[in-house]
Length: 325
Image 1 (cartoon, rainbow, N blue to C red):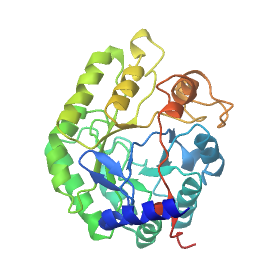
Image 2: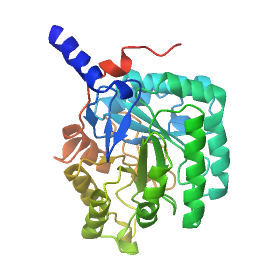
Image 3: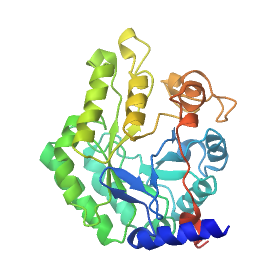
């Protein structure tokens, strides 16, 4: 016990500026104690399927995952958000909260930001800022021009910081989250827009073979981001786009390359609930025992599975001050 307390004290002495929230340094995420963490865990349609997360999170935690990306909505109340963040914390899962209302519609970004700017939502996230990441909007950029994309997110970042957000802000790539080239181009402006230098850039690798993606192309795109020093996270990907021959996604290359370069990845999705792409359900019933197919492969069975690679950091610094009820 004494050794643990000394270690924690030293950690806090080294990282006093970050003792209240997660922080992105260069391309990595660090806990309030300065411990580097690579985020690994599934997406979960929480608001639609399990609004409190109570049953889902306990099952996800059994896989060894250290995080979960939460599908949320602007309809969610502050009380509901508080509950779901609290339940993620209790299972030692870093919650990445994304509001799903845009889903390709760039014109809705302002409405998503308005939700995050609500005083009750600001206060709720602040109570959980030691372990929470705010994904401003899911896929909020379909056909947005590059300048429009940069300007829109620059304003969003600055508004959220002015409102008091200290958490990492995660920004999805344009083109339904898939356009990594545009994300790489926009990255310097997006990173410079944040006075707290606490940004994550998320790409959704819905990259099937029929669109020209193979394992080597996936690897090279990730390496380009690494060489540029970008704080990249793979926010979504699946094993297939559809059931055609060309629908196969090189997901093993995605995972193995992410592991090689310590990049977080969030497979889609802890089921059930995918319609019509039911093949993307990792589990048939939301339980560990219900894992099937690609869910078992990437969560449990293979050497590259989350169970064998995710590391849960020391949560003491994140939970020593319990959030107010």
